[in-house]
Image: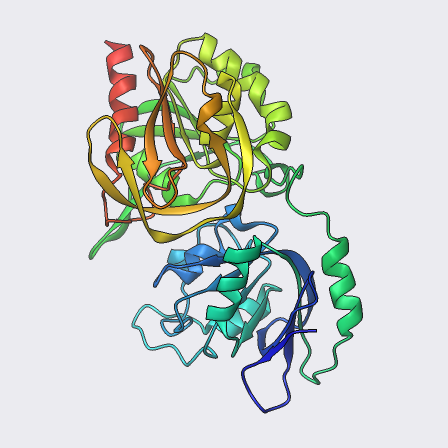
Amino acid sequence: MPISSASNDKPTACLALADGTIFYGKGFGATGQTVAELCFNTAMTGYQEIMTDPSYAGQVVTFTFPHIGNVGVNAEDDEADAPVAAGMVVRWDPTDPSNWRAADRLDMWLKSRGRIGVGGVDTRRLTRAIRQQGAPHVTIAHDPEGNFDIAAMVAKAREWPGLVGLDLAREVTCRQSYTWNETRWHWPEGYGKREGEGLRVVAIDYGAKRNILRCLASAGCDVTVLPATATAEDVLAREPEGVFLSNGPGDPAATGEYAVPMIRKIIDRGLPVFGICLGHQMLALALGARTIKMNHGHHGANHPVKDLETGKVEITSMNHGFTVDSQTLPKGVRETHVSLFDGSNCGIRVEDAPIFSVQHHPEASPGPQDSYYLFERFAQAIRERRA
């Protein structure tokens, strides 16, 4: 059984991969045990936003950047009410925070929210294993006494069914509708408020990040958020001028069982539609394409994406383990963006209709604003339809 241990001290945390590989480390945050898919994220900043991104439901995140936790945490940087990722794995143990915005330590923040952290792990080796073998199922455990039942942990990882066929959007979506008018953060004021009459937009929450809603509001949209299970009748009752399909976790085909019929009815109404991440995949399914599971997905803030219509290369933020199979796009649907890492699909649009979507996250400040134009394009499509 391959074993990796970063320290001669007695370990207080353990990762057990389904293939029997064991990594030991030092635990922080909550104690206990959890089972999930293991992925890696290459971003150098934004660990709090990553941990609270609902798209990471069902996943433990390995951070390839070694210094995680050194700026602490604060309430402004949450993308959801609490961490959604199942846990985190880092190279160096989190240090005391050194940042004027820090309101708490990362380890205490995780502990109070029931999420396990594992430090002192050779994340380079772990990342190579993920790239070579695909995103594995893993059991992670934190026990201050260092007592681990390795055989049981491996068995749990092997028995976990995985994300294929799993609808997680239903678990992370809002429970009731609400309105949103908070705009993007600007120095030194912080977050603002959109005032006056805006463009009426219904956002379907498959696991929406707060900053996406802020970007919609900043683009002039009066946003009403509805749960993932909303029907076309629920959406149309709000008299929207545009419909937004949010990011989210899980298998798009599973979520599509109830989401696709709704989206098709919205498309038939001729409303402008904009999707991001899982919303992009939902739109593609509704248009007749298929999605497939990736080997290890795309997770990071440094992914180059080419706009095929302009030739522009954008530096984007990514977070997805499934992708749209561009070979299945039907006639009348054009591929607009591709990943320059592996050529996978990153955007589509319907010809002669204000309906488009992208796989990457234009709200996450990559580039730092290379892709923000997409929100403005959506708002402009609504204004043109008004006219």
